[in-house]
Image (cartoon, rainbow, N blue to C red; front, side):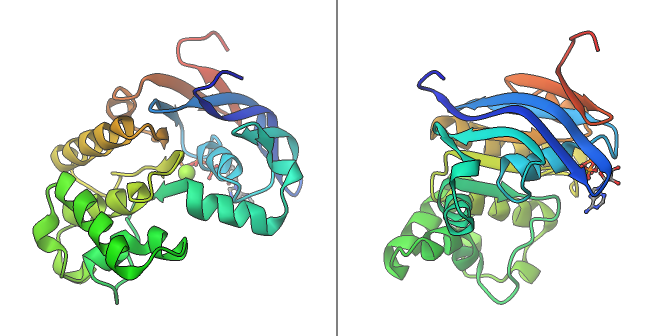
Length: 227
Ligand SMILES: Nc1ncnc2c1ncn2[C@@H]1O[C@H](COP(=O)(O)OP(=O)(O)OP(=O)(O)O)[C@@H](O)[C@H]1O
Ligand SMILES: [Mg+2]
């Protein structure tokens, strides 16, 4: 493993009961680099993402984060890893309606035990980088779809995680908005050395990645490789 590698999966299988969803996946993620996985609906992209993020246990194979195998961590340690070292962005943003934009953004820092004042200050700084600092006192119901997706991005990056897992992060936006939000997301992630795993069915989205893989029927392959 080289120094810039943060997450490394080898021979990962995931089955739901007797149904295989991921077969023998090999993948490594590097600091500040964006890796995209494309593939048809049902090919296993989200299943692989959930394994790599420690949300679902792999049926077989090994996943190492900073050299440490998930298999050597107990449930509490995996939860702490997910909360403190990983960030997540999903298709619909999924903000908490009762919190302000700034409080939503600060959530990972608050969950990691940071005091309210410094957490809100860090949140405001990320919101500023994404061009939405003026929205910080509003609730999620009072901002547009593109704006709430920017908030979801801010929340995923605010604690400077080692890895952000993004599953169709701009899937609910029109293409103009999606392109702008994605560019801002990836620029900020790269600048703070966060590795991004980007799952999408959209080739134009995947084109913005540094490395591309395709998934078909549970099997992951580098883009352009013969299957
Ligand atoms: N909780 C589950 N229980 C049983 N089977 C599941 C479960 N989740 C997913 N599957 C199956 O696993 C396979 C892979 O699903 P997955 O959600 O990983 O695909 P995907 O590539 O993310 O698709 P999409 O592009 O539609 O999001 C599919 O055949 C799906 O039906
Ligand atoms: Mg999916």
